[in-house]
Amino acid sequence: MEFSTATLKALVDLARQGEGHTRPNPPVGAFVFARDGRIIGRGWHHKAGENHAEVEAIADWKKHHPRTKAHALLVTLEPCSRPGRVGACTEAIIRAQIPRVTYLCPDPNPKNRGRAQAALADYGIACEYLPYEPAADLVRAFAKRVKTGLPYVTVKLAMTLDGKIADNWGEAKWISSAASRQKTGELRERVDAIMVGAGTVRKDNPSLLAHGRPNPDLVRVVVSRSGQLPENAQIFTDGKNETLVFGNPHTALAELGRRGFNHVLCEGGKVLAASLAELGLVDEWLTVLCPKVIGERHVGEAAVFGGGKLEDVFVCLRA
Ligand SMILES: [Zn+2]
Image 1 (cartoon, rainbow, N blue to C red):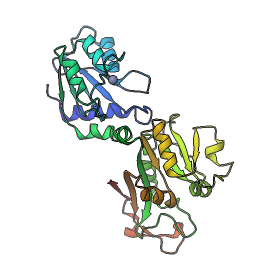
Image 2: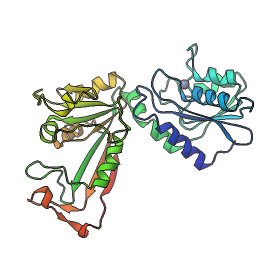
Image 3: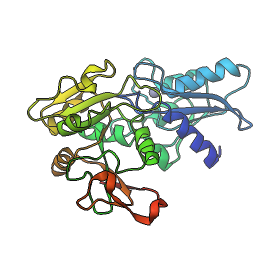
Image 4: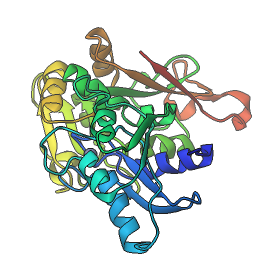
């Protein structure tokens, strides 16, 4: 069966609804198709312990189109197939008698990779791998943790044209534009934890929460060598998401990895970002380059390049 790029993109978008909620599992999406190519079932993995995407999509099909025969199942990640495991997705596909399965990314765990094909072939179900980069992107963080035990780390920094992430007084708030703060804020909805250094907590007293819909699964992490943090900081007193404190970045990431955290977003400051870089723990740098020059001035008086007509530029570097 052929799938249009629009269909593949829609499926990845569906899977993304689980981002930031599924740890230790990755986000996954699945569609069930009728013979004429219509999508008759949609599902995504909402949370660990709940149905996998394939089971959700099959349930959606049975609920809304019980009399239409399923022709194919498309899923962003190779279906799980651990033999004997109750509830393996290959078992659900076999029970539902769906004759064709296409997955867009292989299981990152070498022990499971390619197993779905063998498990389904015994029942005459064709199973093929159709590589699609955005689907591999969905499990990038999960794959890192499965292979190394450590979460995938994105470090986000906003800097001026003269390379400053704060002025001489440590003030950083107004370096990036409102539009790019909104955009990077959205990243908080897609990760498992936000990590900052103690200096950022003392200086900015941030909430470290997503601006949009509240995500109770998001955990706030502070790295503080001394452990001396202001007791009245928002992250300790707002009664919202859990906040963890660690003495150094390596201990923090090792423990988060052990607890199944896939993706950690570090929002500074520069001391923590540099420690992570020195330790080789950064997977991705998201740099917001802002058309301003601070020089020796206060951040609020920074010279604006291009008369304010230029937008911030996002640069993503991957190790
Ligand atoms: Zn599964």
